[in-house]
Image (cartoon, rainbow, N blue to C red):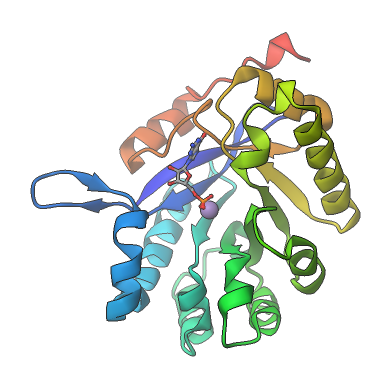
Length: 244
Ligand code: G
Ligand code: MN
């Protein structure tokens, strides 16, 4: 498990982390999920992998409890459609009674709704009843983002990086971002802008009132020891003073 910080644009502090699974090959290379999630889904190993990721993310969050607000975990459409997914999640939550379930966020992409054989809205509603929060991942890139927003009981919108890169110099992107921020706020949802790489884009997001950001500008995903170092020593310093 690697972790990438989510940073508040208001305080400059790390408020949460996205847990991102990586695979180490026998010759020591690090592979991103892009290279193995497909195979894990085909072989059915996604079930064990999904549970492992969930448990590991929760254990790290509990360990960093005093320093980190929440952890988010990506859930693939296939995982969500598994009949055992909700019982597995409920079982894991029971195994960690010290964890407030609202400190766990599941990130789901819109394709989960399009390609699924199950009623995704219904399944997510059941998950929400467990107290876990839901984030709409890569928001804005699918075919039916507004339907997704309407039909899913989500708590967080994760604005896709394609709207974020170059935002500061692109009036169209900035209009879209302001509209999504407004929409999310009116629906009682929070927004995280993903893929923030440039200081100008960060400043534009802060000025637009986007509450939280994530991206290489602050930190790439890091192994737990390095993430912890950043978390405890607050090394993920934002140039907040320049803009406030
Ligand atoms: O689909 P999702 O948003 O969960 O994808 C997360 C992936 O995005 C991770 O693999 C992570 O390495 C990558 N990522 C995180 N921050 C940035 C960024 O600032 N720029 C780019 N291009 N990719 C990023
Ligand atoms: Mn994600």
